Image (cartoon, rainbow, N blue to C red; front, top):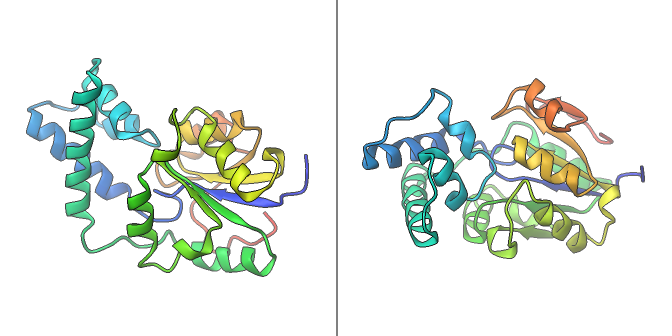
Length: 215
């Protein structure tokens, strides 16, 4: 494998600690629809997926594109309401990004969230300007676990996929990065270490506190 020359981060659960707000937003949507969750960890079905794909999994049935988009937008409304006062960065990630900058390692974001969410959530934390590029939902045809978002991020960095290191908290995100030919370190903010390793993560961290470069 090539020496790591670029680092790519998922956003939710990797850069920002948004899991609780996402879980509450999905639950609010289900409550509006009068649908009881099929299982206690129902929210795991949504992790890393675009909203219009996740809502079909939650409801257990196919929807028209229009209906899936409408419900995904409604979930996003709940999320924005809950996150109105901002979200904290994942522990230690700012210091780790400082180390990457010192080492002249370019970084990108590869997320299933919208570009507006990237700017709105990372901007107030002073994180948005640390990334050469941000590949968001509007930029891809296929969501994770398809590798498209990671391949586009590598292209934006000007780094071959095999020389990219990815940080991901979702099983589908790990699968996407591995399919892109990248090494992955899992961040256990949403899934367990065993789940992330089974998906292809080379190692797993709880957060970035005390995590040092080179990884």
